[in-house]
Image 1 (spheres, helix red, strand yellow):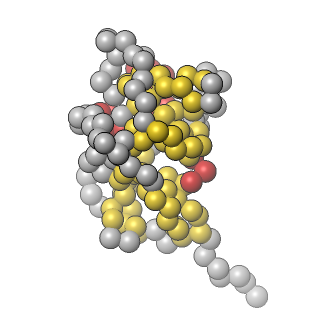
Image 2: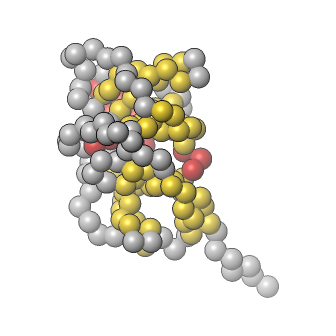
Length: 149
């Protein structure tokens, strides 16, 4: 007899200033308190400098700014440390500015995709309960980081 159980995945909803991102929880290494990054004045607006995490410096970026919008650092700002996917030895982690604590959610193979406009660094939009969450293109984000600095 065939097993018809649906496969599930634990996701994280990352609150940004102007949208919510969704990622599998394995993409996130850690949530840390906000700290201002050290950066050069000639850096792109989406690059917020380098922050210290586990005795290493990692790049901090604003997803909103990388998509052409304004960077917002609110009173609930935090940093999500992402595992880099590109296999580059010089880029193992990326720090992403978020506006609050991510929420866990269960996702199954029957995700409901939503037809809404997407920014260049977004792959898709999905319905999660009452919320539309955007799926970020993490490899494109890495390419932007490597090529833009």
